[in-house]
Image 1 (cartoon, rainbow, N blue to C red):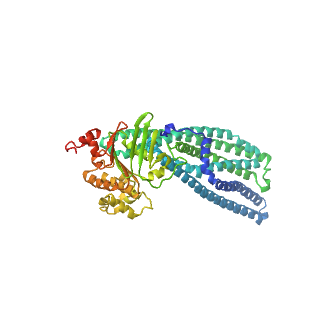
Image 2 (image 1 turned 120 degrees about the vertical axis):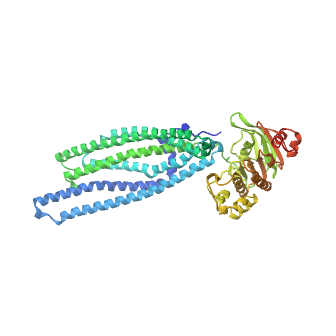
Image 3 (image 1 turned 30 degrees about the vertical axis):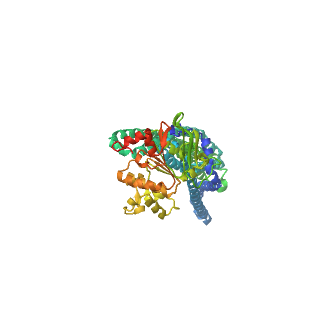
Length: 614
């Protein structure tokens, strides 16, 4: 049966496992990413050059200033030219660097958004293929959070976080190499801080990851609460439970605030600590850098004419470039943990395998004759709690068969088993001689039209709710279907006709009108088997008469299976099957069952006490 996928049962995954599961989504774009990283290497190289150029210009200006003070008459045009050339080179380097930034940013956004688009589709399709039992066990708010919010966190992972992490690592390597090229002693001072940075980052990562799981769980619980309570607001107001619901909401809200506060505290402690390390390192590097330059001179970069003051300026710039990625690392690690937590939640959902899927040798059937047979069927929602017990019956094509019985007798269950919302534990269900497990699920459901008691209408128009946005269904077919089920009687009264807007859940239409729209929706998709589950409940007498006329017409479409408490709707059925405690206790036509003076007779007498039983 359905596997639970609540947050509390989500399996924790290691970073390596998450990366391994994410790789298939990245793999198709790996060469594009390699191209972006190659550009990034050039970008970092230009960035490092731009760090050295100001020191070189400063050295050149210093040389000219000294020469001008000592011997102003010896100042030559070539001295000024050198400064102008260096400035032009700095400008060109800056332009090229920013061009690289633009190209890499645009490329990463395209790649990242494509990956997220594909992943979001995969997650939604996975939910689409889950059984009704599985979907019923998962709070809707949790599913919405995973499809919408968690995939958005991944978008930042692919378009920003991972690439910036790589960029910053490359920058750290580049800065270290340049520092060693200038003075290896100063570089060692800088590298001495790396263990402190790595240890603090590791602690931050673990704390952040653990807490962010709580944050996401809190938000998911909040979304589930909002979805349920906004949908059920009418009941809340009827029973004056607003204050109680506000208290429940406050408790959930407090949990989110507490989790977010802890998240902020963790981040607030890490970022200032890294900043403090930066200033300590800067002071030591500049102090020892000046000392080494004055004592030993600038040997390694004399060929570009660097003076001591120029080297100090480069030291300052490089230390800033060394710690800037590390300071950003706090933000990126924070984003990385959020993304990894979202990945964990998504992959837990994707690991929830559908209760059943098509067999490898399952076949497509384009048309059903409508011959339905149950052979010794046993079914239970929970193990050993049998809803159906050894149920057998045979329905011939074009027959109208009704199921009656008390609540919990198994009527609706039979209808749900035919369309494979659930799978049976024992026995066999055949349509036209084919075991339904050997028929592809889409093919099976395409040939069966279902009209339920609770009609769901989507936001949109009457037209889009009937054709379900299937462009292959023409407007003429929709109009014909509406006339066939008498839905045109109220559609024509609407100012915009078929283009009339439908509110969420169809709240701007009566129960009967929504039911007629569901009839039209079913008819226009041309099913060969029709299922009506309490489709005439909760409607007024006038609308019931319209629906009765519609049903009489629809009986000509194909095999019809009806569950109804109103026995007036099933008197014309070819066979009425009475169920009790999951077993068939009697069956026959309306008149045959009345003559037996059994279960059906007593049920009919209860409904029509003031009428003579005929």
